[in-house]
Length: 273
Figure 1 (cartoon, rainbow, N blue to C red):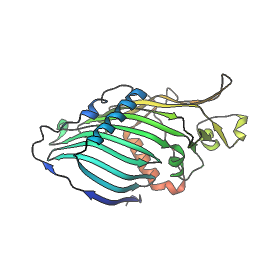
Figure 2: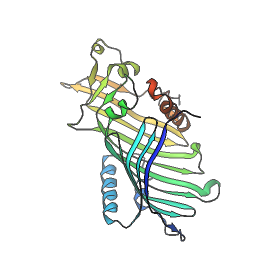
Figure 3: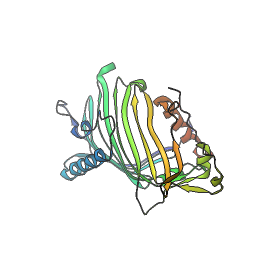
Figure 4: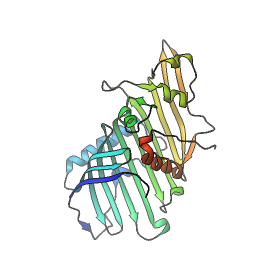
């Protein structure tokens, strides 16, 4: 037993099996797949397309009240699906996560072996709370603020080493939550200064952007900074020589974190390129 708490609660809906799979396509997802750097404009157009698609209705809908895996908790989950014998068209996915929303769409083909098995999946995060995310893992290493994000994943062959993708996350202005980063997390990230006598620091800029190639995640930009009177008094950036981690390693970290969340331990080590 892995010791990880896993819960699925309140499943409702009706799904019809489609015999003719030739028409199972996902136009929403393919509008993003392949973009090397999805950005705020990509985010807005994708969100508009998802909203329009939902308003049209007429889909088979599967609803789940809650899915919980360790520190991850999705609520009010809705899947709009086309299901064939060898294809699954996820026309739209929506759920609450960390006091915000997560959306997704994708096409999954699982007929046969090797290259016949493939998927393309696009995702969008809207107004997620970093405080809620930090609170889900009992730890002193906290960060607060609200974020948006968008990205995609593509895979042929079904192996972790063949995943490609791209992602981009950034903080947004919000009265719900200030942008702060705790002293313990600053120390863990290598910040050394007298001002760390304070319990937290403000930040006004943040960005996590990167790509995935053949199962390796590379962070091209990872910055948290604060500027006052034109001078940056805080800047944290990713080390250009230690900015990669394999998808397999990251998934093992997530599993271990879910298992040990109550201990308040979270550590991710990056690989040398």
